[in-house]
Length: 101
Image 1 (tube, rainbow, N blue to C red):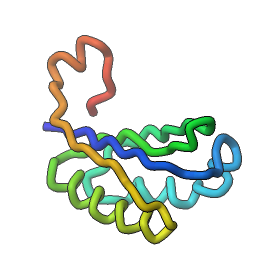
Image 2 (image 1 turned 45 degrees about the vertical axis):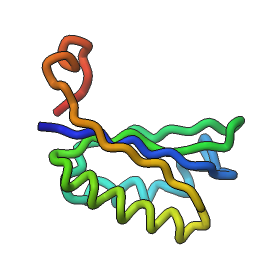
Image 3 (image 1 turned 60 degrees about the horizontal axis):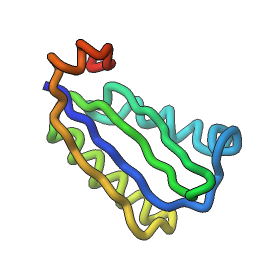
C-alpha cells in the first residue's frame, strides 16, 4: 500500500530557477530517505507558499519523514508546517494514470 504525504508552508522564497539552484542538494538527499518513491515540488510565488507531494512505501516512513522535515523547516525559520498523510486508493488512481509505483 502506498501513502501520499502533502506538505505546505509559507516561504518568502526562493522560487523558480532560484529555488532549483539553492535546493538541488536537498532534492538529491530526499531520494535517500527511507520509503520515498518520488516527490513533486510545489510553489506559489505570489502567495509565498511552497511544499511538496510525496509518495511513500508505508505510512510509517511518511510519518517519520514528516517529523524530520518539519524539524528541518523550523530550523530554516518556517514557523508553521502543514502536513497530511493519505492512503492511496491504487485501483482508482491507476484508472486516472496516477504514478503510484
